[in-house]
Amino acid sequence: MPEAEKIVLVDGARTPIGSYGGVFKSVPAHELGATASKAALDRSHVDPSEIGEVVMGCIGQVGPDAYNARRVAIGAGLPPSVPGYTVNRLCGSGLQAIWSAAMQMRWNGLDLTLAGGDESMTRMRFYDFDARNGYKLGDRQLVDGTVTMLTDPFHQIHMGKTAENVAAKYGVTRLEQDEFAVESQRCAATEAARQAFAEEIAPVEVGGRKPLTVAEDEHPKRLR
Image 1 (spheres, rainbow, N blue to C red):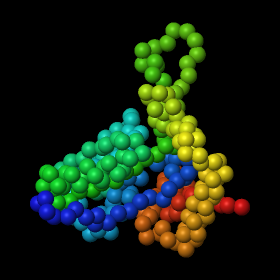
Image 2: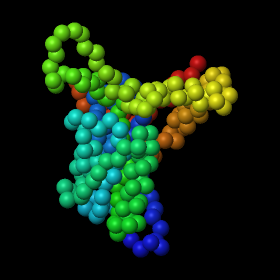
Image 3: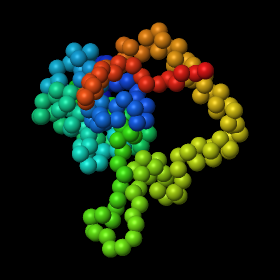
Image 4: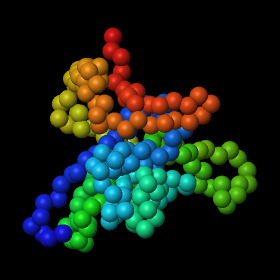
């Protein structure tokens, strides 16, 4: 791609937003990513074989969820010849993936890329870092992968505590935070009621004893 040409977003899609431990508790993150990616490709009328690179942002890619971008690509119907890689910049991972894909187009001459992010906090693992080497005596404690993911490794400060520190620094009261949160939920509920998000959502098929199709966010909360 010549440097003077603009890079544009052709189309996009997202899955419904699930609650923690909610309707998507049995669905791996890469399957959510594949569902959204396939919907975006279908809407854009882009031939999947013309994609030059797949870049996905994901934090919790461990064990069977490793190599997230590759699994998203294959799940979305791209041919095996299309390469892909995954980036991790914590909460900014999806945005980093889009930026990285754009740079691939700018500097590596690609015409089309597929980029986005997927995550499932519900399916984050519990870890036992000593099990592989065996135990002798005493109890062992599992480590919550979600908590470790949200904790700064240098100062051991959880993101929740960071939020409290920022609120204290800038004088944001708990009441102000609650009022902001309630208004956000109210606005989301209003827009959801008029199907404002329907066009951007790619429904997800959830298997099991009672299969279902999820086409709406589990949020917002029902406000009293």
